[in-house]
Length: 621
Image (cartoon, rainbow, N blue to C red; front, side):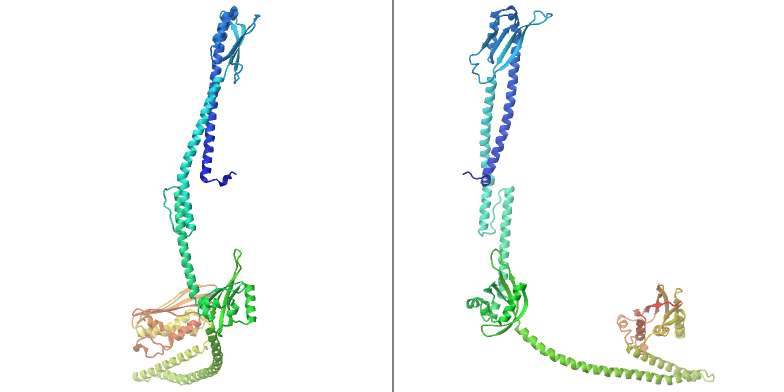
């Protein structure tokens, strides 16, 4: 039985296709050529028939008019001398004579129908005379020569077709066998070697054509398969190494709990030296691990329901009688291609961790007892500290009253004595010294009380309506005498756009300004100091004012600036520390923070210092 077309080889199909195309092409060309030649031969035959008919009509006219039978007979014989004339009939009009006819012997048996040409025989004696029809002739031309030529041409076309088919099929067979079949066979052999495991084999590329490109693709595929196989083997080796050398126990079971494999760590957890010994003992995991039936059912139900377990703590027993706390993580792997599902899991020995947790629980319980006792002690200490703080506050309040009462008396009598015009210069200097010392002592007491109040959180600002410009001028007037004594320039620049009346604790703001200005005078030996107040922002309800105090004094380095606002900290040299406690700037910073801002500093040694802060003050209409 003939194989279907799809089972033919590529070579056979290619040869059949090229043969069919060549056949159709030759047949089409041959049919066109034969038809064309037949048409040309037929036209030429008709032309010769027409010429012969014209000649015969002129030649028969005179003898028929003259009834010259001998001449007519000779003319008929002359016409029949043409091999293409098959027969001729001549009929004279007006004469009771049988039509004259000549034909060849084989005319009746001709295989090709003749071409019949009928024409009239006309006689005209002179050119001016009217022509007279004297007879009618019928000329039979044979088409056998044309048919023979056409038949010969068709035979040539058939022979040409056969030759072309033989040439096409032979060349196609040779070319396909050499250019396609042999390279494809080599590629097939290469693919078969690759399929048998010879990864990385290559085939030499003979030509840079499509098959050569296909060969290069096969070579690259073989190399990639080899690299993938090497990578897979390396990955498998790494996985096997991780599986065998993992510190955690790893196992696989089928859906019925039969052990398929386990690593060395799990075998040792179960009391076996090697995995092979554990598998030889039993493949039933329930026999290798002793577990309470209720606990086992709970774990199995949870695994079947959730398909996954993560870090489930369990207490199990081994075949050598040990008790282990383990942590189980497992999941169900669905089967593929008819295989049943399996269970993969990992077990961690958490016995030491459980013991540590139990110990930690005991320590935590003990620690809670210690914390409770310590909390009670701290509560009592807090009560005692609050009582001591209250005592300190009462002591400071009492001492401030006790200190200020005699100081007010001393300062008052010193002022009265200064008004006595009978004192000489020595006495007046001594009285000035007493007054200055008293005022200094009063300032120290005030600073100490302010710092104690700030630390105790007892300082509260008392905003009131204040004429800001007047407050600034009063602060400047308070130090003008000291500025004049040190022969310093004092620049005061108050922005004319400053609001006239604002709400602020004027006493505390004046205290901050006096402290900054006093320090500027204290640490400036020559040059100038300045106070600048400017409006930096304003809204319908508030105004933001920047107040800046700068000098050309001794300045400070970065380390000194970092300690500047710490209580009882004096960063100047010893010669300038006399008469101060180091609380002024600390108190000023705390007061400015209560006002919602902070004092900023920029200073360089030998170039002076600049202090500024921004206050957002409510406007008072």
